[in-house]
Length: 291
Ligand code: R5P
Image (cartoon, rainbow, N blue to C red):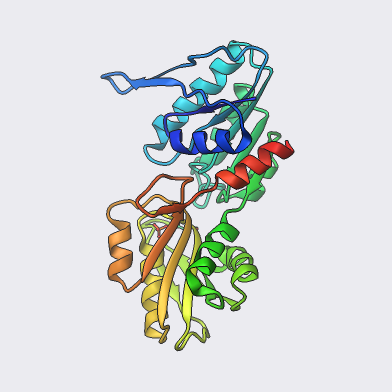
């Protein structure tokens, strides 16, 4: 087995290779003046199990093209077996037509991966796990929530309340609760399908005087977390922390969240960012050992 860190996941690829005790051979890559991508394998992949590690956070279109180029070239160069590790799977929030006529982007990405012969995929907290499980590609959807919860536990926050900012994220709060053992609850979120603006309702949350950690899969613009933190502070929470797997942090999202009263933001290295202090390398290495 060799690990090929793509241009978007250089450090994570090396960490995974180190944990597995195998060689990491990053591709050579560049962007041409007109914006097109170039990749080149620098070592033979013939007859080898090639693990390509490439996240698809912004600029996601470029990251995806690089991923397609790497997977297709690995096939063409005679790799025996190819596993794609795509820690953040772009476009997976559009997993159906919410408004008539919309393209289902995650389906298109999957179809393209299948067309270039991808058969095995490892991803972390994808937004549409059910969709990815039914694609015909052998997919392992890992979760980094326990790692995030453990981070907070190690910082002395055992017993903190795990909160989901919306019903869909409840599964994450439940998972975090198993580590933190301080109970879990859920806020109600509603997103305007046209403007994308999120409104959050408190429901009957009892957070007075408690340390609270809000868990979500993605922080994009930060709108959801800003609302969640504001409500939890208004309800009398002592300290509010924010945890997410994929810290996209578009347009100063981290600053906005901290300004709204959050004590700290913690993310993982599925997407490299200033808050990505938890590494998903151990769970990916484990998954590759099991494959
Ligand atoms: C939505 O369903 C996701 O789980 C996140 O809550 C969302 O992507 C966060 O977006 P933003 O940071 O822009 O509110």
